[in-house]
Length: 235
Image: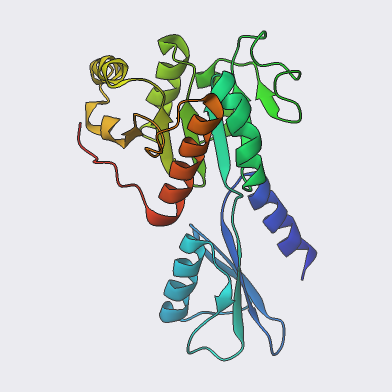
């Protein structure tokens, strides 16, 4: 593999941008495929490009059907979970999500909550959620859960999350709390997008303890990641 190819793959991974490397096994000729197009010394037909884009969209690596000796290797961002609110549920959820292969970031400007003592080994941000999310980026390999139960923290995060490419958005709270949240988001002009929010958050497993709720949240995030978002899109 050429140094320039390695450098571009590394840069794409740093920016959390998906990239596909197609190699002709017979002579090593390659091309790199991203959202903008395909570059390199290996020409691909329209059918091969379409198949490679399909593989990239699903994050899979495979030989291209009907193309002898062409192998497509997908480089996609690792799944990421952004947690707004360093609360008790977050203390259980963060290590569970990390064990499931997620990159986890806990966001809370309240230093007494977002501390290394309460979240050992977890990436923490003491920024306000809107600042942290703008810096981290909201791609389609990322999920966000708003757990602070404080509109000053949760609402700005949701306002950025709703029009983004996030594959999952969830918010803690009772149905009454969620209805008030929806009223605020409608007033902010996001009424058509509020149906993306999973609330009550998590699969209905019947649990009540923080760790049990964390299990239900992670289960729903994983379900949506692999099966698609079943929340209605209307508000």
